[in-house]
Length: 422
Image (tube, rainbow, N blue to C red; front, side, top):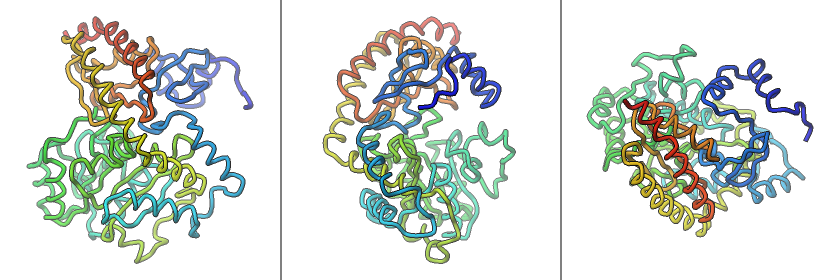
């Protein structure tokens, strides 16, 4: 690898000047003095050598670990023949990946469209809903997150859309509280919504869990009022719940499922939408109405096919269930040792949100975990929640090391949390 700089200090200085001043400064202010260097499995290292256990995994990008050897080997072999490909034409790889994604999805979802990133895929799902229904309005939940592109950004929390002046009136976007079925029906009952888009478990809001019966009831309301149901599974899908799609565990068959992040194995970006006949109407009307030069890149397809192969192994699903239970048992012990600060655990498989006292209680926890060699991030839209996203191939030994370091970090953060909560 060609090195352009030799010191961490220079990287930080150049990032402050040339890259993203605000984000770089934010981490410095929080004491996260880190520049990513080596990475392998569920660990990565600071440029100066500090090791971190990665339990944020970039929102799910590295569910199979950093530099997964099977995904890399598949890509290296593919590079002997393939490149990005041409978005105009069919290809064996695009056809094979689309067929496999349909195979692992609910039976009525029988079409697949490929994109480059999750935000682009969400945009395309929203456009598909508009075409299918002849309506414009999108209904989403407050404090949701669906990406940073156009329609996806407008459907998400104001925290991300306001700086870019993409706020839209209620003729285009309506946001209702999560788990509030009455508010959802009120919004849908006007019979003018193209779709409801839902993160099955809202990630950036700290993984609040759907109330019993909530998601199936939302789906029934969509059917009653003619709207499509889009399941945003970018962070919750691909076996993180112990099933391929978390929404399936709630007995919901959506009209569309959006996936990305971990689909490329952390090696090559790719995203997809799996959809039913109604949602895919525009493909038959004018298949060139949407184009994406890098959507469904053939190198991305190679990685995604290997990822889906790994995810469908019984050993993988068995491991997800083991790690989920083992970590929960250990976290309950840590919670019992810190009853005045560590208040609850939200969990569906390896989708976890840890709640701490005070409105910003998870921030000092993040800082102290960092000092103890663990990387997890507070939820951007609820700073009392620490997002915990263990990898689906994590071992018992890894879990033991993680729990030991988390116990030390949470205990060390206790005084800071109590001081903030006063």
